[in-house]
Amino acid sequence: MRISSLAVATVLLCVPVWGQGAKKSAPTKPASRKAAPAFDKKKVEDYVRHLLLWGPQITVTVADPIAAPMPGFSEIKVTGSYQKVSVDEIFYLSSDGSRLVRGAVYDMAANPFAKDLARITTDLQPSLGTPGAQVIIAVFSDFQCAYCREEAKVLRENLLKTYPTQVRMYFKDFPLDQIHPWARAASIAGRCVFRQNPQAFWDYHDWIFDKQSEITPENLKEKVTAWTAEKKLDGVQFSRCLDSRSPEPEIERNVSEARALRVDSTPTLFVNGRKVPGSTPWPQLKAIIDWELDYSKRTGFTPESCCEVKLPVPATK
Image (cartoon, rainbow, N blue to C red; front, side, top):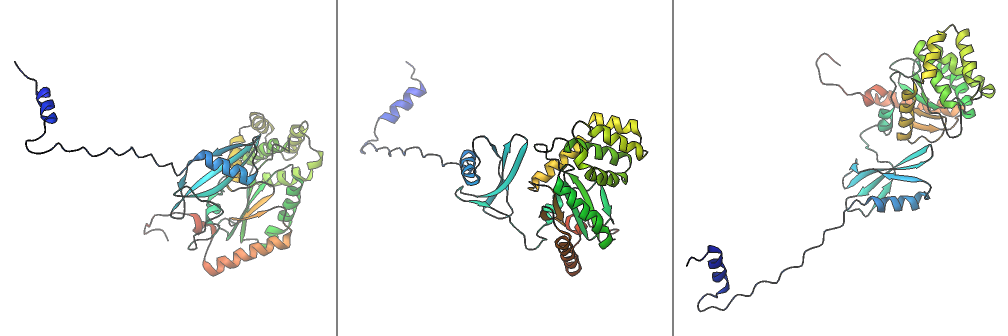
């Protein structure tokens, strides 16, 4: 009779070795519980809701963590949304998930506003002033906003007269759709003008702020079209651009950029990356610009040197 190898193995395992007692098997250790994950989205959401008074009507989105600029922490973006309004908040979570830090982290080896300055795109944006200037001003504005109108007057009357070569200003659309029903259409019209004639944009900028009280959602197209005819712009091209809303993605990029920069009101200016919210009187704004010019003189900092990356090619300086 053949005995299978499995049966032999079973017998050998069951019979004690001659002269020795059977060894007791070591007690099995209970399976260890898995440690709770350090990053718990629901826990972060609940905590931030309570911290910021974000009730159930506000949709909260917690992004996945990314590397933070300081060891032992992860950076987490939390977005609160209600209807057409969204606000981003940045938090830093400790590696064990027990501490949440709200605030800004600065690298003392770099300009404190370099990160925000790098977020501001200036290509294909309406601009005034000298290319390569020591100070860059980005203005997030809304054509239907009364405070923006006043700030625009201050800038247009004083900026280039006081700083003919040291400052360059960029206009960034930030229409507040939830409270200004024709602001986005005005931004689209401005972009259509800019596409035809970049310099004419500033005439449009001054005109629409000046006529702000006369414009409604119903008459905007008629009034703007009449203005373009006076300026001898191509009416067919302008109407096609306005009706198709083709510049809207450019406006959306500015809106997304504003959100990333935590802009929540208009006007908001960035002077070499320094956030200056609200309508700022000229003496205060001039003092900030002078401070930046002095900083540039002392340190050699310029917006281009801050945020430009170059390969060490011998032909470049």
